[in-house]
Image (cartoon, rainbow, N blue to C red; front, side):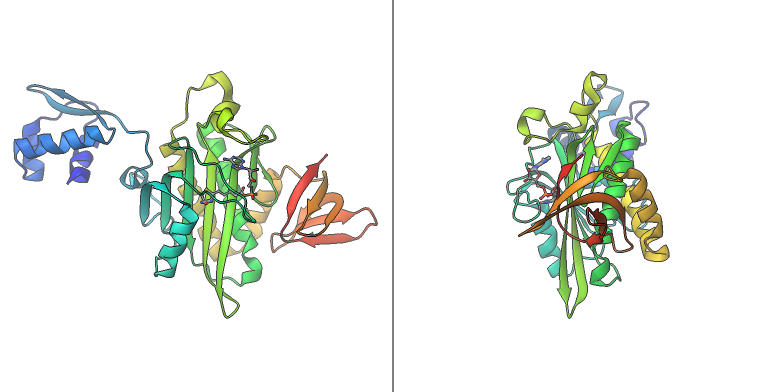
Length: 322
Ligand code: BT5
């Protein structure tokens, strides 16, 4: 019922709507409507109440509530189902257990905070409350596991586009999973794959974006969109960015499923922070050094070693860029 009342208020943000009209549209009594309005205010909605005139919605809560993210989202598949939590250990872990219990493709899990946000290889992701976007998607793509790295590329392209559109910042991709603004990490992507008989059962695509996070709360080398835009902006709407991100993911994912990876790879190359740069890539037990030249059709980084040989690197950390 809260959602129904919200829909009515949303349709009248330019003027007050009388309690009487809300009662008529919802078949609720005056006192029940008043109770719902109090509850919405409690949740952070800014609703003005004027005797005789009624109610007017003047502000939304700075929270990533499922019903708010869905409002005018207009995606085809991504975000068909959205779950939002206050604090979880990790949205990837929540999405993983939902997927194991049969959650449909493109289910999205958002949280205001993570107590054990995860990076790759056992590393952690700092996730202060209500400052960033912490999102995991359940995906069930019809692709071989050799193409799974392309999902990270697809997500990276979508993140850069959403950041550029909503925040006006030039975001770049540092292969494989970092998004940088002014050379500082503002976003990380964690793609986890569950396979069965060497086929992909599901993929959990985790995305963390530092939106309004103060730099003091972040590890060295990291920043947030708010910090990078400087004094021009007091804060960014996480809601607007989350919606735009889902729209971009929707577009890229559908294009990937129907037309393959060529479009994503072309966009990725235009956004890469590494093209032509000298890089050092570290793996569990060794490192290689050379010039980052390109990525291949599987999403592997092609590094030209000093001896002239080319190596295709599917997983690793770029530890040095010149
Ligand atoms: C990543 O790992 O960059 C992937 C991060 C994915 C986070 C999302 S949030 C939603 C979903 N649920 C999860 O539990 N995770 C995903 P990696 O490349 O391994 O980088 C991790 C490293 O980045 C850490 O070791 C720190 O040095 C640094 N780091 C940690 N928190 C950060 C932050 N908030 N911003 C920037 N850098 C950070």
